[in-house]
Length: 350
Image (cartoon, rainbow, N blue to C red; front, side):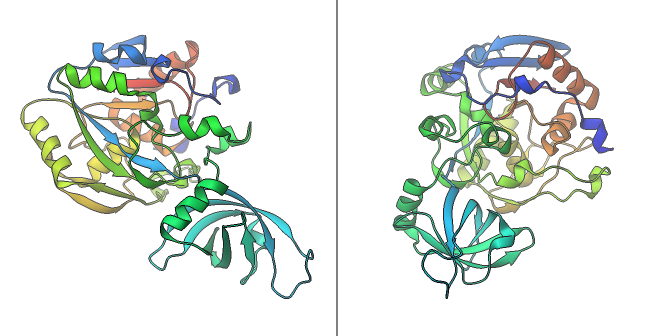
């Protein structure tokens, strides 16, 4: 298939820059069988049934967008200082961080980037289009300094319209976030609050937590027309033994396994070993799901509305069919659903 098969025209005013408040007030498009129903997220229990299992990604977003000043060894005080913007991507085994740096071209080995009185980093070198830096702190001291100096790494299409602020510290984090490491939120989960989760479990729907640390690569555009030539970014994830057992038990009992978000879906399909079978798993996944993929675990999907020509549009098309997905998006635009990370939600049941 070609990249153009996943393109569509989206009015700019449908791109959400703030989420609905309260969280469950967002709208919910339900696509089941041949019907599309317009609802609100607070109505979710109307489409779930006892024995279903929602799979939630409990990753926690770190305040990974930093603004600092670069200084160069050997230069006089005040000489050669320039501003640098850093977005954290992932740590490596040597204790260094791979980051996006703007402007990358100004950095030289040995440069020091100062972010606050407590936090600074040495520029180590370059890895393709990424910079490699080493912070002056690690462990709990690093976490504390990062919390003080960093901002939430909002997606580029929001960051281009406004700066992150204190509201985003809450809005861009799920209510069940546990394990720090993501530089982008699992946004399909942002619509849940504690009360709705209690309602869901009270009706006999089970919840399973998995962890996939969402990377900034989720926003990278596909640059090849032949989508089979696209290389997916890798992200670290974990499916515990308990999670695998819970998911297998639901499948064996005839219940539906519905991941909340494309990140949770990609992770459980990475851990799947056969139809209805899944094993404990930990590592990096670069699974690329496109039309023709045979799902082993997934029976439905909760997800927001995605960018044109994105790998996430391809994943949704694999689940729902290309024509069906196109019809869903035509409906969503016509009914003025809000799009992307802070936008509305959908429940897709093929």
